[in-house]
Image (cartoon, rainbow, N blue to C red; front, side, top):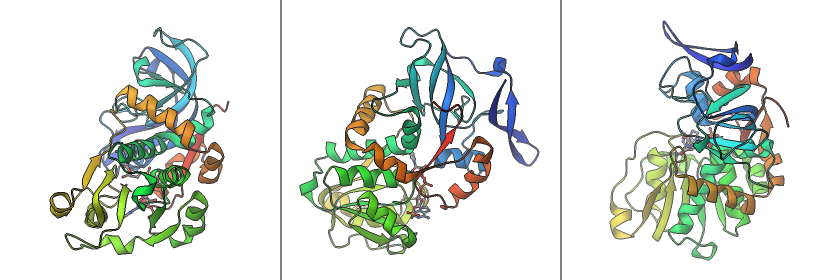
Length: 328
Ligand code: NDP
């Protein structure tokens, strides 16, 4: 038996509880992992609260991320005792996920734990941090360099935003951080932001084009925020768009794209091909100071995850949550 958060269908939607689950209920897969740590991402919180239709089949164990130790393997790439990390691939949505004592997955979905990170630090990063790295790589791919000019990060006090600020600052970029929580200014400055901007400036419908300011941007918000960011990009600037915290809409015009040559680079972590994942984790090892993680993470036990999910969807969580399950 192992403990797991279990989401099931109920008359008025779904039920969610911490349950004891028998090993023989684990789904099919070539590798069984004893989960050491999981985490709580925005998508997990949507799944647990039922706020968006993330769960594709019931019953479901949520958790799009886990790190742990291989307990059984039919995959020649992994042997018992290997330390592994999983991010995405539909795990926690259509395949049982990481908010559990055990997980069984396709070995092709796993990546080896990247030195120098511990299993705990890998979940301090999690999908949010790995997505932040994919966003930085997208900016670089489109030629945004520290000397190109200021870069902007929206939703900066959240998971993706916090890690993006920390990475960009370490790489030498001048980073402006957008937040709806001015009380987090000192936290964001400690991560490396040189300026804090009030989210309210970005939340209302704006003009098709604004004064050119940003050479690059990482946007987790979508909606009016993304439209206003695009409108204020410098000539040939790039926006890496990965989220919808402000909404799924994109009420913009084509003006920034056809008059300023702005690039809107979409970033997806879930189905991201393995070579790019491995590159993102290598880059995280190089460009994210592991010591910074201590300042942007806090622990929530498995039996506190359901309450924390409610806080997360309401934007009340700072940085990243780590869920210790079998500590290493
Ligand atoms: P968090 O909840 O940790 O952070 C989201 C942050 O967005 C909040 O902390 C808040 O930051 C800001 N925010 C909240 N509401 C609004 C709003 N109405 N308008 C503008 N900003 C808002 O989530 P994550 O960082 O884990 O994820 C951020 C987004 O990225 C989510 O939409 C998520 O689904 C998406 N995502 C996408 C991935 C992909 O593969 N494409 C992978 C991972 C995440 P503050 O308080 O500082 O304003």
